[in-house]
Length: 172
Image 1 (tube, rainbow, N blue to C red):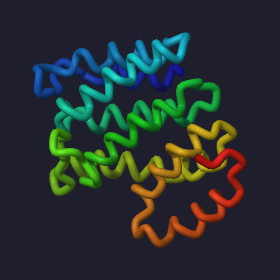
Image 2 (image 1 turned 45 degrees about the horizontal axis):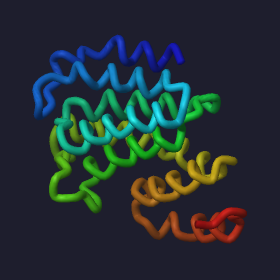
Image 3 (image 1 turned 135 degrees about the vertical axis):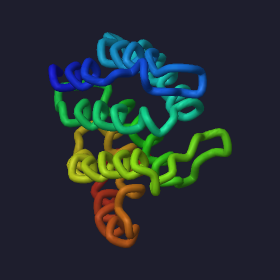
């Protein structure tokens, strides 16, 4: 977990703009999320992060948020992986401009920060592929949705997802 805390500490959140001001609230919410003992606590922190990331995040925060959540997902002992993957999925929707609601901020990929955010998301692809085989069915479900966002062109993902769905013990 030291890597995650190090990334949080190295980021100068006070200089990163969000629609409501500065990004100081983001690391506090990330700490609440990481340190949550119960699902309700983790879900509450994740909901606050969802709201901040979807409605208020500016391109500047996409890179550190993505880096932190990729690092969290790399930890097999982290118990809120499905929620972490959902947060990362929201960032991906903004960066990739896919199925975003009108109120979601879209990150322009032709900007320097947009390119950096896209590069961070691309680094997550091998990890997400491994999560398709995760024991937790919720993690597998979110990983499948996220994988289809990252697997461009989509045709390369379809055979694998069909095979995984056929093998799924707990289809939803």
